[in-house]
Image 1: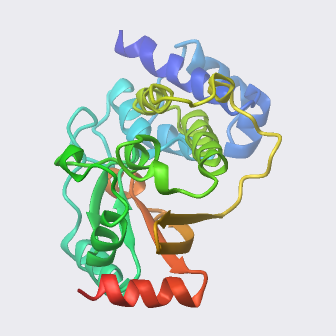
Image 2: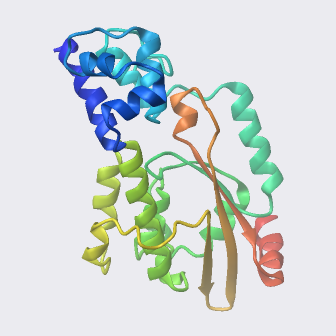
Length: 267
C-alpha cells in the first residue's frame, strides 16, 4: 500500500495544481520520464526528490510530511504527521507575545488553520467582548468564524455583515482548494449551518478579486469601532505549527475607534 500511496499523492497534487508531467519536470529540473515512472510506481523516489517535487507543487508542510511517510521516509516538518502540531519554538512564541504587546491597545489575534483562536491580546478580548450578544454562550475555546457567523456573538453588531461574510467564505474556499486540507471542509460546513447564510455561497466564486485586507465595523448602541484587518503568515516556516498560524491585526480607521480602543483596551 505504501508503494502505491506516494504515486497517487504525487499525481493528485500535480493535477490539483493543473500541471502536466512535462510542466512539472521542467519546473523541478527532472525528466518527464522519471515523473511518469514515479507516478506509475516503476521508480522509487529519494527523500530529496520527494521534497523537490512537493516544493515545486507548493504542497503545504503537513501534507509534505504525509507524502514523505507514504514514500517510506521520516517526516521533516513535525514529529509525525499523525500527531498534533508541536509547540512553538520558544523564540517564536516570545516574538508573538511581543507582537501582541506592541499592538495594544488595538486587537491582535493568532488563529489556527481552522479559525480557532490560539492567542489574543488584552485589547482583542476587551474590545470584541463588548460586542458579544450572549457572553454566557461563549465556548472555552472560541473560533473566529463562529464569532462572526453565530447570531449569539458578534454577527448582529457587524455593519454590512453579508459583505464581510461573503469575503470570509471566499477566503476559506480559496485556502481549502489551495491547501487540499480536509480539516477545512468541516469549517465550510459549519459556516453554512448558521441561519441566513446564502446556499449559493457554497460554490467558490473567483469573479471578485481577493483583497489583502478586510474592513469591519461594529456598532452596538453608542459604541462603534471601525478596523482595517490585516492577515500575516510566516514566510518559509519550515514547521507545521508555524505554517498553519495566521495573525490578524486590527488598525483603527478613525479617531473615534482609536479613542475607544484606548479606553477599552487599556483597562
